[in-house]
Length: 186
Length: 186
DNA sequence: CTGCTCCATAAGTAATCACTTACTGACAGA
DNA sequence: TCTGTCAGTAAGTGATTACTTATGGAGCAG
Image 1: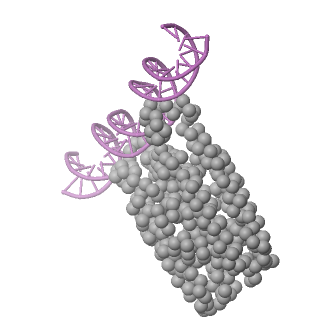
Image 2: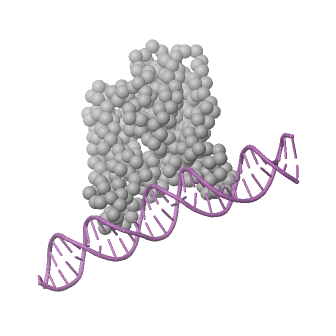
Image 3: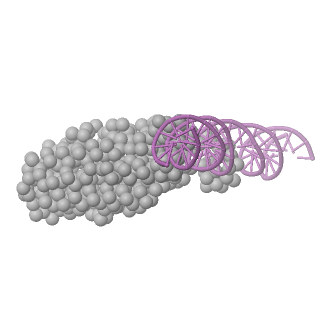
């Protein structure tokens, strides 16, 4: 998965996988364990999805519901940071899916439902629990927050570091600021 | 560029490019015009970058500076929508860079500076002109807004439509809401 | 008509790569 | 000890692909 993530699916050769697995490269020993190159990828994605820790655990209500305070703001930053670290941990698969998603429609659908929708639902529920009776579009707000965090990760991952002069600290603090202002009174 | 954008760099063959250009596929006629496959890509990216309309034109101050009102909010939505349409228009190059950026470090640097930094600077300046003396981190806010819009485009482009039950209308309206609340008093 | 310049094509070439086949040796069970 | 199974390797095979070389023909100048 590391090879797939770094080089992409097509650019990764069976010989490289064999070398990484301790087999003699080019000898075809991989086919004693997998039926095809694609089967290797699918097994890897399966394992990654199964072993992924549920992010929903992060969305435990931090404190009593009500107006957002400093504690819930810190909690939001912690959740966002945990999301970034999780994206890092699954970086190979995420990068691979971003690159070669079009070639694997079945995997694409699994990711769409399993990762995006579930996280969005949990985040929206958490935001709702923190909201103090505003008329904010909670689902859209959750989507905006997820988008910002995801895109921050994609940029740092693709370019080596975040290209704008805003570090993770400021980015997440501003995101928490956004959340607090949106959940508070209008 | 359409082929590169849809299939990726490696998966696009010289024969396909020749067919798309009206040459007989596989006959090598492309090499009368380009030195190599890579030269085709670079010429395409060059043309795309040169012909790109400057997005900074969208950031003309819409109205008098001051507290955000309904007019400036509508203006923000229009700007964000224009950004999405521009991402659509350059969709092939954007998709290609997202997929195969790692293989072309020189192109990566050009995009980082030319597209991201310039747009970010213009957006931050516009936000500053609209802000009414708050202590909000304008640069970070601009990064957050850009991230959200970019990620919305990436998702719709990669998955066919936005995977969450939030359409463009609600997404952008909420983004405008975020902007208004952040630029207003705390 | 002649000769020159291009452009396109046909037909390769060499490299890469996923995958296969034939064989070898290690090991377990009887 | 004999035998079957299985993981590993060597050595291919056929398909693909970027790129090259040789050939032919259209257009044009003189």
